[in-house]
Image (cartoon, rainbow, N blue to C red; front, side, top):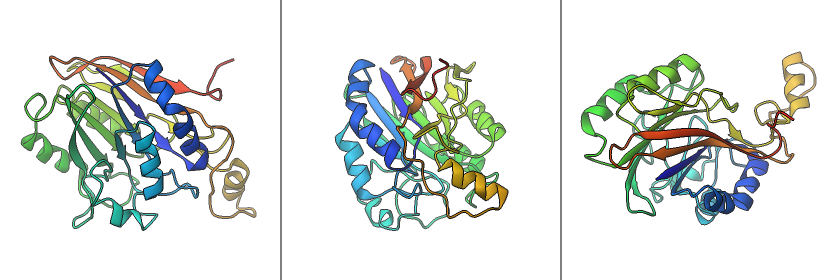
Length: 267
């Protein structure tokens, strides 16, 4: 049982790369279930739309997760209540449309729980993520409520992501970070059997500043002439992780970083 998780999709570059290539990657890597964080997939680089979601579902995405930019395209607030495959962080202040957790069926009829969380440090204000996690653990459990559990932790700082990984160790199949857009080289299985990577990276143009136009971004740091951030539009690279899951325990047997595209090659 293989799960592919893809990091933040940025702008039209990342969106097009997924639509054009995901089906082949699913076939070539024998993927059973696909989760994509799409909170930056709009052409503006912030938020997502119903059209983008529907195009992703058509090309093989099973679940879409999000983060602090989930509401930046206002139309999504109406769509998210109608589409269970689209999640927002569970610890966003209530009342809020949509859900932060749902259980889905894979192609092989396994039950896959997907939990979307957002960090508290240097992020938009939301409920305490560890308190939300504690309540979740008290309510749900691996192999009782679902066969596998994947957690997208959308956060800014490494230590908070690392701590959540250990907090769910042995209770989840995969804990993977999103939001910082650069893939970390720490994919491994924790002592309790949970696969972990601090950040999945982004699906976007890496000839950029975390997916945004590099010249404009540098000018903003230099306090020179610049405009609001906008995405880089060069050819994208897909970045994420593939987890090989143990169907008996619900834990991970293997985790590998997934990179498709030329921009992150060493040669």
